[in-house]
Image 1: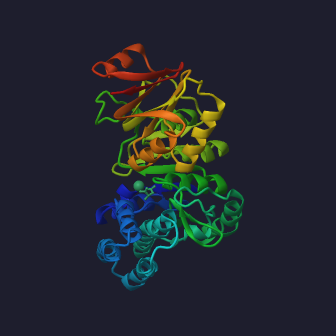
Image 2: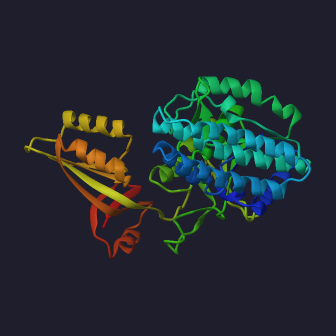
Image 3: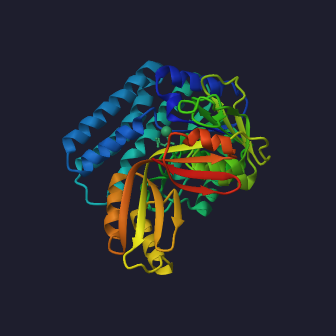
Length: 420
Ligand code: ASP
Ligand code: MG
């Protein structure tokens, strides 16, 4: 069995959905498990619904949701003729669930409502794709992933219950392939033991694909994207960027960790653990070679550049010239845990600790405020974090020529710089 993941861009219009279906049909006779994201920017649109609902603007929430409904119904209308009524009824069931909720008043946490509402993006897109394939006479079955992926109730960043999920997948998903060639399900979402929907973190569909492949021992995972392959840098920012046709799991997990937008960082471990190769291919031109990520070590790599803008550097400085050691560091860690924010880089000096974060404005303000009880806190915004793997001295010079480097960290493989 192969696992395919189709991201939002591959199904964001009628033509794209048809294109995706034709890619699937070109693998006729093979067993394929398909994980899809929400169409286009649906997840962002659903986040706006959540915000309006949670802030008590019910009418606005309903109106925003109405737009989203119409978009999906329009797409359905153009794709499906034969079984249109059945397909529409399925979408309407998902709509109704959300609308019921939107008519209530929020009494639980923001994150809880986020997951109950946002999960519908993937339910809708997978349902549309599956019904379109049925219309095209492909033998595909739709699976509600919330019946098989069990998580804890850490809403918006839920942790997988691997035991339960393995058992469920083995007993109820694997047998589907005796009758069907194609199983279509949702990325990014799961459910708790109380049947509440959960999400795995933004862009989490890649991770879902890896979970299925790991448990069902897939032969490979293919992530279909709107790029030709994985590149050594973002070609929009770095014109010298080159295509990387093969990469090791180690290389990719490091790249993703440093913030490269290639693949969700959690995706690699489940694949590496079972030695399942990951292919990145273009849905715009499936004949292109793409990138293969596997246990083979990557040789002769060019400098790989990961550029993260919108960074904040915070200096936590001892108030009375005592060393910043175990106790204040522990207190700071607890704070970061509570606020759910992770530094992208940190460095100690005798009486201060420097940490660089993505600028989630609210969290940063909250952190600076709380930490000021323990430290003198200084915040500098609008910075860039540049990471270069396999750097050469001249690549560093070139990339930092007109920049003010505030902090640099180097290992043999990797250099990271925070720049103004
Ligand atoms: N639809 C979700 C998001 O946009 C999950 C994904 O795309 O992987 O974050
Ligand atoms: Mg997406």
